Image (tube, rainbow, N blue to C red; front, side):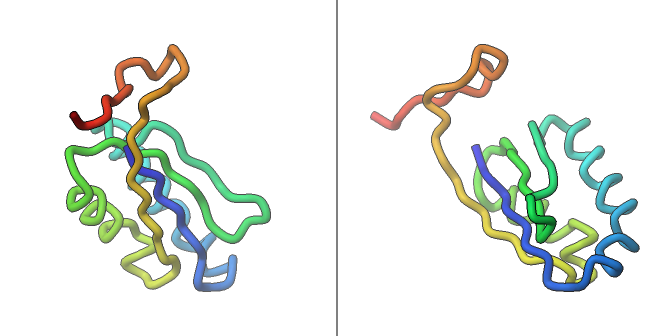
Length: 99
């Protein structure tokens, strides 16, 4: 599982201009089953996405296709973690520690 943290590198008026394309990009990845949750940070200086993918390279490619990334409006930090404990609603995403 991955935590994708966006940090805006441009003023909010430029972010808001691209936001509809970013929301469509999010919807595509929700439909594909890659994104589990997302939202703005408070204060509004970026956002967070919880994602699942076979490996980090897949996530990094997805990040590169974000309209915010393509327009140079945000930088991403990608953190991989093993979700060994989850809420019941996320049981399907529970992971095991390597042997």
